[in-house]
Amino acid sequence: MTDLLPSIQYKTNKSINAEDSYRDPEDWIVQIQAEIFVLSEDDHETYAGKCNFYFVDIETCCALSDYDPSSLLDIESPTSFFIDLFDDTNYFSEEVEQVLQTEPHLRNLFIIDRVEIIHKFRGKGLSELAILDAINLHGMQAQVVALKSYPLQMEASYPRLEPSVHNKLMALDTFTCSNEDATHKLGLFYEKLGFKFIGNEGIMIKLR
Image (cartoon, rainbow, N blue to C red; front, side):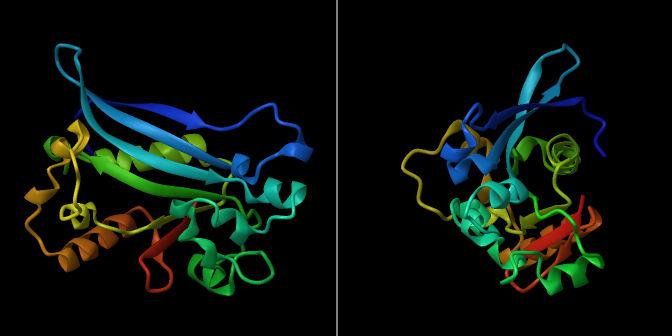
């Protein structure tokens, strides 16, 4: 763990005060954005990165609408990766139960979408702190946490019209290992946090 003094500022996007009969299914997909800062000795906060998470309230959605888990997850691109965690019965698949060695009683999902620590602060434990804090703070109504293990360095070659300040600070082109090695390393990192691979598309899951 880091010996820095990090803090996280969360921003949650969610519709409220909507009548159940008029609810849009997107209302049950809650996006949680986070910015990470590190406090210096002179009490100045320095930007260290950002994260993106989703809480998917499948239980409420299925109870109040005609949507099933797959239809709900298919609404947003980042959540669509996790459709195959559910089977035709609209509950977690047998493979999920085998990987987790239990049958989850809640279908809600907490999804770790992106964790982006800038170059200056990598390797100091901030990713782990951010993930665990987000799960504990925003994932209490989910029993299963999911993510897609995908090294950000693979985006270094993506064409960008004008890189943002954040993207410049990420310095993705400074990574020296191959994409294959980066994928392996990232998988090991998430395994240390208790995640297990399911399938062959980089999807990993764990119990909260």
